[in-house]
Amino acid sequence: MRHVIALDVGGTGMKAALAGPDGELLHRSRRATGRERGPEAVVEGILDFAAELRAYGAEHFGEPAAAAGVAVPGIIDEQRGVAVYAANLGWRDVPLRDLLARRLGVPVALGHDVRTGGLAEGRIGAGRGADRFFFVPLGTGIAGAIGIAGRVEAGAHGFAGEIGHIVVRPQGAPCPCGQTGCLERYASAAAVSEAWAAACGDPEADAADCAKAVASGDPNAVRVWQGAVDALADGLVTALTLLDPRTVIIGGGLAEAGETLFTPLREAVERRVTFQKLPSIVPAALGDSAGCLGAGLLAWDLLTTTDRTEVAPDGF
Image: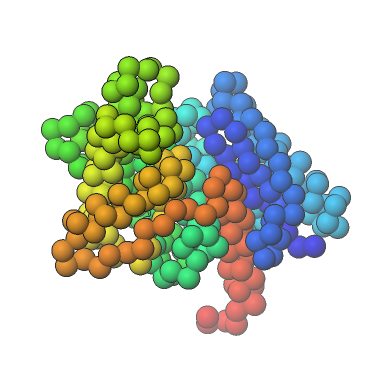
C-alpha cells in the first residue's frame, strides 16, 4: 500500500504515523523528543524515528514510504527546508529536510507545527469546505494559521498568522517578544492559569479549574474568564478585519472548556463587529492529532506536485 511518513515534533514528545492516500492513519507511534540531551541528540532522534517508520512500512505494507512530512515548532524556512530556531528544542539553522531526505531516500516536506495543524483542521477537520479559515490554538501561547483555498499561508518571511502578538492592551503586561499588551499575555491558557491562580490564592490552579469555577458561577472566575474572552475577541476582530475568514477555528487547551468559552466569545465578537462579516467560530475537531495529520497532508501534497512535474509536457 502506498503511504507516507507523518511526523509531528513537539517540545517534549513526537507523534508519528504512516498515512494512506485518503489520509487514514495506518500505523501510529510516539516517543519522547529528548530535548534534555541537547539539540544534536534531538535531531538524531528525529532521523532515527523516521528511519524506523520507513522500515515498519516496508515490512508491513510491502514498500517503504513514498514521502515524508514533518512539522516542527519555532521559526521555519519552509522553502529551504531549514528549522531556523526553536527555543524549546535549542536548535538553530538545522537543514532538517535535507537530513531526512538523505536518511530516507524520499522527498520530504518541512512545515511549522501550528500551520501544519491548521492545514489539517482546514481540509479534513472543523474547517472542511471553507475556502477561507483562520485557525487559532490557545495553549501556552497563541499562534494562528491562515487558510486560503486548501493551503496555509506562511507569509513572506514565515511569520504569517501570529495573532498572539497583536497588541490588545497598550501599556499592558510585557511580553517576551519585546512588546507590551500582546494577546497571548491575556487569553492563552497559560495567562488564564496565572490570573486564576492569583485570584483564587491557589498556585496550582490552572485554566481548566477556572473554567469549572465559571460553570459553577464563581464571580472571581467569571471576572478572570471574561477578561480573557474580551481580549481574545479584540484580537479576533482585528484578524477578521484583515483576513475576512469564513470560519474561525479555535483549538488548544482553552478550547476544551467548550461552550463555557464559545458562547461568550461568539457574543463578544458579535458586539465588536461593525461592517465586517461575522465568521463561524467553531471548536477544532482533530485534537492533538492535527499536527500529525497535517504532516501527512504535506507529504501527499509534495508527491502530487512531484508527480505533476514529472508528467508535465515541455513548456508547462
